[in-house]
Image (tube, rainbow, N blue to C red; front, side, top):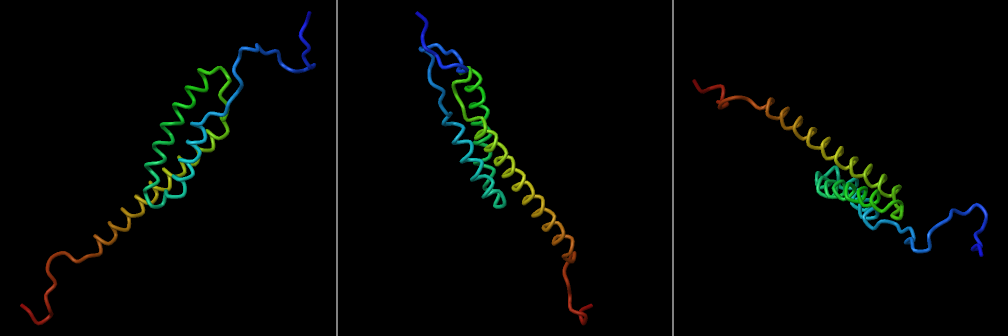
Length: 118
């Protein structure tokens, strides 16, 4: 006797696990969001680094699961936000260096004596 399967639905072994969203994908998105929001304060580097590291693990686990771990869209968004945080932090560091160099160049060299001192 053949099991009743709706037409057009893929055949699936009943012992296969149900597809589940990866919890690491949510964590990567949350860390990427924090990184993007705090990127201008250079503090965004920490959550961005952790998020990118976690994204690498999540991709490996999703590949090894054979399609039973979902959440690739959350993972992509989180990675983009993390890279945005890294870019903002790098921009802040470069801008601070330029401002610091311009102030350093503008200061007079040596001691500035009054005009009446020989």
